[in-house]
Length: 81
Image (cartoon, rainbow, N blue to C red; front, side, top):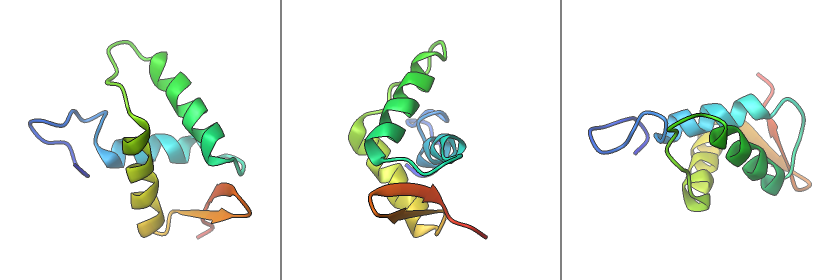
């Protein structure tokens, strides 16, 4: 689930989805805006597996557990090192 396996495509693994989320967070954004941007970006990739909202939230949970993102005043942002 976190890493790719025989049953989970590498573009659908939570680390890959999390990497896509981090790539979008150049500036603080709402969760809904990140979801919209990620969905649009994935649609532009041919044969990319679809990501459901619950899978997106699991990727956010993983990033938060890894101290990679912050949620402050309703805005997601990359955590400063």
